[in-house]
Image 1 (tube, one colour):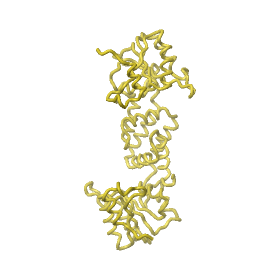
Image 2 (cartoon, chains in turn green, purple; image 1 turned 45 degrees about the horizontal axis):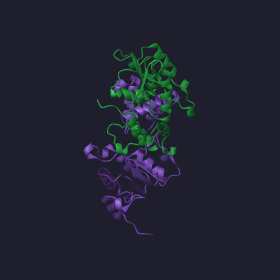
Image 3 (cartoon, rainbow over the protein chains, first blue to last red; image 1 turned 90 degrees about the horizontal axis):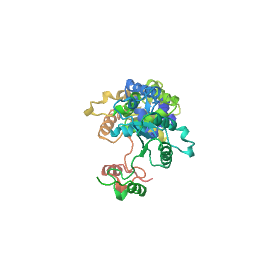
Image 4 (cartoon, rainbow over the protein chains, first blue to last red; image 1 turned 45 degrees about the vertical axis):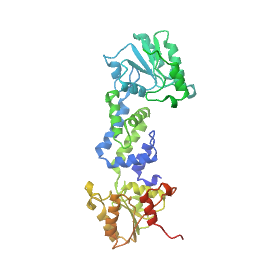
Length: 200
Length: 200
């Protein structure tokens, strides 16, 4: 296989194939595409890779990805400091920010409790969250964690720890917008019933 | 949108999005994946990009992608020097090499004749092909070019130029292996009938 490509091309295809969702065909397509692009464009991509890796770390307050010691969200004076939304991963912060609905703070746990994988609360940013809730005037902690086995465990664990000190809520689970009762799975429907609200 | 990402991450997502088949969601997924990988791995990818771009040029004989002045295929002593397979692009050489069926030489045109896009024979490696056929003991030129409008034009043009000097053939078009007569389009079926062969 690798003899089909000239060596530097083989290395590039091999590297691209390591990316998630990129198989041998896509890797070849991307590599041949890049070889046809101007050098400046390829260098821009290579530099963006190196710089992102070098410069992006974690916010020291909320553990969201940040190029600064404290992230833009934590620094924004306009945002509500009394509400903290707890998520598993930075990608969840990004997803929530895209809704433009939430104007509070975040806290990224950096994963979910998963004894099978050897991940306990100590491997996650749970202690800093508790300290944060103690030290700031937090009025509500919203747990926005996926409804998986690990997610439920983490939600319960973090919820129990924080309940003595502040109001703890979790996001709603139910029928997605545009969803169809007929095609929803039973667990989703059960959750939707359970989470029913009075019409206002 | 870009305010959702910390700056170096935004730049990386933007660069990844320029790749073919990579939309905003995939770009974000790839970028976040890369930030979680060890620095060495990200650098390996960045270096593979730069090196492939710097080192890979074209074979001076057949115009296939090559890190050397003359490519591995042209240099291989075991390969038949009397048969040249003409293709539009290096990716076609790679596809044919993967079959392990062809043991002759290649010639990459670097595109197809397309007056609409301002691409005539002079923009392609047609003259070097003719010179090559003249200067070497070529016994057969196989045209392996896609059956598109531009492909047909190119096949006819190159075929006419070479016919006085050597045998010129083209690859067969017909029902693909595993294909179904019932679902084949009419043009493919017509080509399959036209290209029928005596049972041996």
